Length: 109
Length: 127
Image 1: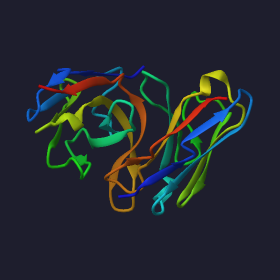
Image 2: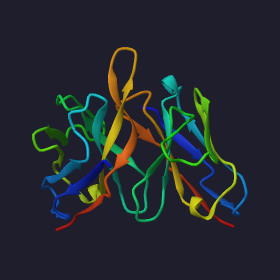
Image 3: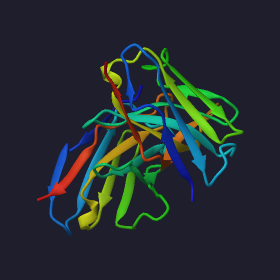
């Protein structure tokens, strides 16, 4: 089973700043089968990025994903007020099982 | 617009079986492009993939839950279901049903990223 580690656990930033979130896998994720989700309190997660770098439908271009192998990054170029949330990465390159990272909380500084 | 809706008891007693159904509307569960999955989230914690099913009935389960999980599909009703047996308090969670894109690997296909989620339903295990 591939274990995902996300860092930092919490990221405190101000609106307009750039956010860089890391997801590291315990072994290589084949085919860059890695996704990123955003979750706000009381809501289901929302798909942001799949295949490491493809934006899901309707996702603003301030969200971008990069990486391959064991190291992946989600970047939010300029934080909007609605971007403060918890972000999870998920790998599906070696499944079952698909696995999620523990999450990074982006909160307002 | 695709919608998924979970239904089932919100309270289950320890050692009993948790049963949930997901009703899909706005799209066909018999599409060859998707798997249909279950994911759970204990209160205040992270996400755990439980398993998924293809419209043909082919299933994948999380090995950590495999001995207790059954996922089934009813294409005539556009529904799929989850059964989790011998539940304990550790199974208390919000349970989500979801549509997962099909992920192609060298020798097999499996469920992939999750494009659509149900709203989730809280299931509490308590006597």
